[in-house]
Length: 285
Length: 322
Image (cartoon, rainbow over all chains, first blue to last red; front, side, top):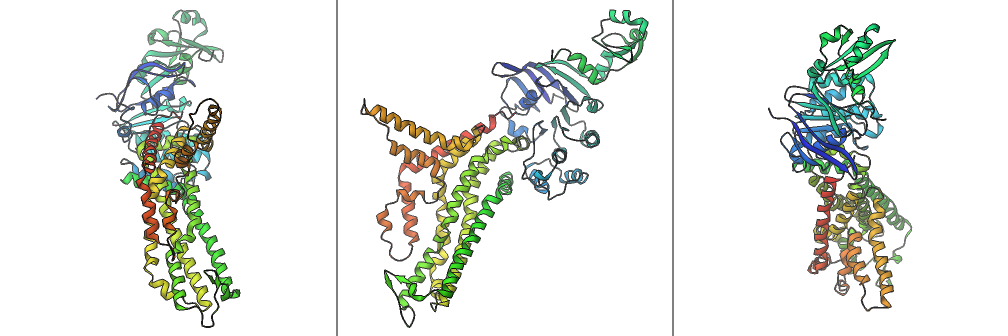
């Protein structure tokens, strides 16, 4: 199976500023990829290039299409929620469902109505009467009812409360996702998505600093609660990050054998957030 | 085709207020004021007030039959003229519709929602062109014809109250039924004349980051002013001059004024229309209007309009709305 998303030397410059600096990556089908990076690291720019919203340098193939020249074909199989997107104020819930059903061959009306029924949205309601969270709920209901091969979610849950966010990611995994589909997610709330991701991509200053599957990451990175008397020995193994929790040193190791680390203290898998912080150290310095 | 239907419906949803409710409100106001005026004149007016060719007409037996038919003819041929205010409003509404058509969704970022659906930029822009040039005028034509008919009936009732029965002669007049068709026959001509304006406004709407109106109106007017100033400066040293009148009429006029229905009348030979004696000769006006197509200006304008619409599509495709 060829890659759903494949970039070679993808670059984008805004004047003097380089937003994306010649990156290469492949996303195979049937994965849920978390694209994670600090503000201004080039996440959104990368996604916009993949969705044919901006011009770029290098090669990029999305579902076999070139997003620059074949966007109209591409959009039949791709759906996205952009981080700053908002629904037009005059749109009514029922009109929105009618419209998407009318123009999108892969839209499942029943599904959308079911999602809407789980919210406080009413069919006759206009977007301008909704709270920010309700607008996002409507947007998600519309997008989740589209059976797209590639779904791109750029900060999809901004403005939603935690209960709805949890339900959303659960729906995404149970109801939407299958091995034919690929999902790319960016979000600041890493903790909420880490258990559904199959792959992780860290991006920093327009470059990919880490791209691996969750299994690989589990094998490669280890977090150790180092016993007080073993700190010197642990430091000798060159931890990539360390912090203090309740007076105990917690160190993060990259590619050090687990058995060896087991002798230093309690071993566990690092959370994506901790890994992220360690990888991005000095970003804002 | 199916997508275009939904795109047009989307425009209708968004602009129902401007395209339907605004003309309906004006139509209602016209019926109230004018119809009320007719009714008032029935109640308190006097038949002596009817003047024809400068002479007051007083007759114990009412109006002479020939005159009655003449009035009926004028009413039956010209009744649509009363809807003129609606068409002036139409041009203003469509002008501002075009200005905001490709700008509002960029400003509120809802463009990213539309762009997440399988809608090509070409179809999106074309749906707005069709809305501006066909849908909005057709809605106004329907409302205008309906309003005119209501006012005609009120007027005839008022006349009947004065003992002048116009019903039979008016209803027998074929022009009564043909007038809406004549009105409809103006639409293709209107489209051609309006194309440069719609193209220009959509281009600015697709390009400008803000202050669309200032750009759209300011650029042509300031250019004209600058050229006038240049003429003044150059006049002292060289015989070469810009033809300001030509630029004003043929370029700026077409860029900004094409939406006004009947703009073509400025190119119609008035002397021919002056021959109309009895009522409005719709066929003559229609023929004379279409004769303006013999001049190259309309066609060059229409081609420029299409080119600017193409430019608007390209801009919409590549503008970074980040």
